[in-house]
Length: 452
Image (cartoon, rainbow, N blue to C red; front, side):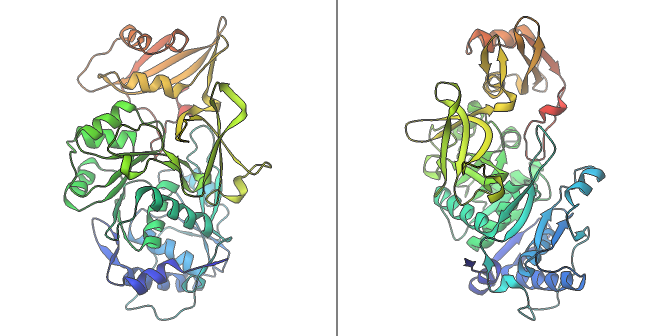
């Protein structure tokens, strides 16, 4: 199936509308198309041909956006590279690429001069558009091939859940090398709206954007949302929704945000499903709903009935047009490795990773549940929970905790706090206090493999 050329359509319909804004400069859709077309010709001059892969080792900003859309216009597969990786890790990500872009492509002197790229006229829905690497929280990052169809269906599903304002201004402080950040650039082109892109998360800069730059949507993780609230974020004037995911989000944090007029929509997603799988609709973002929401439009979620660790809780399975073809198992489902449960309204609550489940004395303990209780303590900044080998119990629950600045914590006090809210076998047997911060991926997920 041939899909419409997203950028060409946006430039034709809204040529003077801001496509991408950065703290340094902005480009309209006409300017972005001209830059992408110029870049597509440059790639051809470098010997890159349709179907080849090009690694984008560029910081978030106009240069990255130009290179990304140049690849799409030329029918070339874009492979974003996280510049925060080591040289060896960057080389591994770029290993399949014909060319590695470490410098921005040149800018044109005027409007697009020809229609030589395949993306002018359309995109094959089955063709691979981008290769995104997973965040690698428990193992080495894995490449995931996402098609044009995956990206389009993800954009449509997100629009149904969050609504779509023609004046949308979506703030992105997430890495563009990961699916959560990259999808903002691509969805904005599909919607013909504005992406406001920061090179990295900076609390004061993000706060200023939310309060002064008419931001309507923002994507955050729990840690960045907490930093914004600590910095005084309250009632952003145009914000319709703070889309919050990337890992467990403490209920206390959601309630704190909503209490000061920050509408939080919880989302669950993963690279293999092109970002969002379930999302709390905007209409409920100011309410009391604390689940990750219902599945996106045309996405199906179920709990594996043959793999339930406790009644109603088991591995989350996903199926639909957003799922990467190569990620499907023989039964036609994406087996996520995540654990969760569905309520009577088919809303999903994620309880943790199957590989992280602690089995203590024959009882299953989800680290995310214990972490949420610890982080609800007013003096706890962040916490990580893991299993440790034990001769008597097989495994015991242990916790690593970072205190809020200027406070003093006691391990026994924290164990007593947990005992008030959790079954005895879930209470950490050992609590280690550290200065922090805990190791995390650029998208905010705990790097448990670095916690020992």
